[in-house]
Length: 252
Image: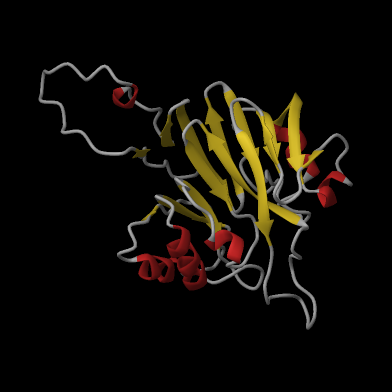
């Protein structure tokens, strides 16, 4: 059984605790959040973030649900998706059976072209393209290897094949890296409130490399994910004093 997650709210500032017997302040931030979830407060309302397994995560945005890279090895018993985002063609990211498990019948699936070729009805977003769905704006951003590959002259992830995503929800921005090394495009990101960044060898990058990249674009909160067998102490050391809050979760 997965361990429960702490409820943590991203807010501009903290309030002093309410004295015993005093009435709570009548603000959305003072409303108790559901147990077991991480929370992001936005101008469009509360978003709940649900780390699941490896690269699988889902978000509840009001009455809408967004799943990212559902994988059959993960616990897929959460609410059904209105939107599914797929980052790449590799089996731990594109799993047609898992998509069928989590999606509503009318759910939109957004994916890069290489995935859409194998999944009928998927909407293609190329790097640099965006789609505004009202409750969330989805922008596809590059994710790729710079040097690592299965053999000389080949890369695990070629530039332009897969998508990372930036989700804009009200006044907040959430970044999902997908499988990538520390690219110039990641370093150039701005105004990211929450980032999910991968770190595992041989396919992406080390925690130390990820720390250097994260320190360049400085999200307020970082969730390391897709980190199987990696030493996250290296990540913490690399981000010490950076002002980035690192939230470790039980992805494995």
